[in-house]
Image (cartoon, rainbow, N blue to C red; front, top):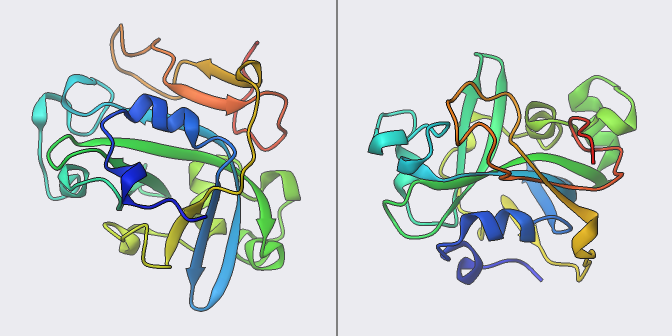
Length: 200
């Protein structure tokens, strides 16, 4: 079952980031279907979050999509190299998003490997930059609806025990406390497709 706007319009971004673990992310780019199970996410909490692009309600041409109502993609280029796929959540103006950091590839593996340069399976979509490239996504897909068949998320009924979803601080931040250490990253325990090792 595809997630619809009743999921994306909720104002509970942290809970939603955790709920996405075990859901399936898909893309259909140029008629090529690729996708996999989400195994790692991070929540970014808008104007109150010093690690977020919209901290202090800052609005620019780059981050304008974040202020839209939930249910669209927010894509940006990190370090001028890596495209990053985020899910916009909640009410218009909230500017809260969920970064999808890693998926376990399940569909269109040959297409993903062509896009990624024949890297090993466990690295195909490990880390947000690799994930976007494997799914054929880039900055041009910014503000794409998550319900129109280009990029979407499905609930296939997979559920994990609470103890199997690990909460940890987000990765690669340079912001001050408390946001540096708040555990707004979620990942599937023991999964080899998770982007970074964390003690647990």
